[in-house]
Length: 375
Image (cartoon, rainbow, N blue to C red; front, side, top):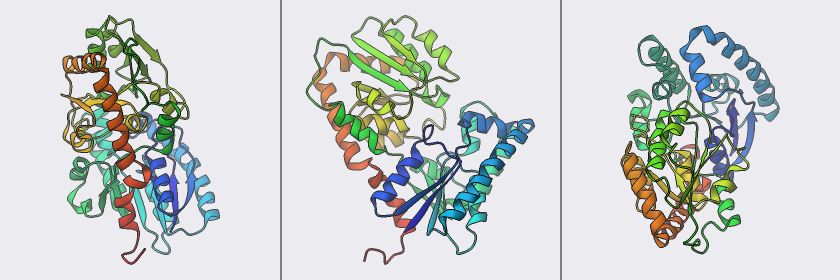
């Protein structure tokens, strides 16, 4: 089945679409890419949508990319399906226009709504801005034939009239994360009990991630045999650093190139997930949870319904927004290296069984393939 992965997405910022493409290829799909990154972060995109006076700049940039995508699409010919990468709220309309002949099914990777993202990042608190973003979401959902979401909780937020065409596809982790675990022997012999436990977090310091919770937890365990690497920049960064100031064992890094991130994470013992308390934080299982598990790290993240359902006993779950519980969890892992090693093995095994690209795209391929395929 010839499938085009389409849009202005950027896999360095949002690897989700790369995982979908890899999974489809692993299942025998003939996958081609029609991609020209927009060059804007998620925050930039949503900010432009929420501020009409910035919309002209977005339109000019988007129009330039669309011209290039149209040329690429023509060269690729007619596919059997098109998958529009996140954030594809506008790209899905171009895909519908370019592939209107032949009834090519259009799949929209609707990882999260524009309105939901704006609310989480405190860009739009309600009123006219939120209504505008909700209309943009609705138009995108209407244009797609299949809508991909990442959790059952996000499926419930899809409007009733579009929910029948939605399918849950877990985020998963691309192959380099599994390779990094093998290369770094991250699931090998127990670490030296005299060495500090190495903990890593990476992200954009958004409210969903709850990084001030991490910062306060690190401040509470100052002096413990725990070394922490915090990677990224973002809106809650300053507050996180302030709360962690008591600890001298925290290394702060700007964003690491995507190609280098798996090996860096795999060199740690523990990967931190998210700890926010907002609506969005309670509905997601983030990239870093799947990726950290694939890389052979023990995963410590918030105890929410979707994360509990996906991770089970293969992770340490703490109440959202609770720095004391997070601090206690890290201290226990530092004191019990055998338990730490068991968690690393359990996370990696779970990822190998359920989080590979080939595994996570199963529900999507079931929707794309005709009933008689493979019979």
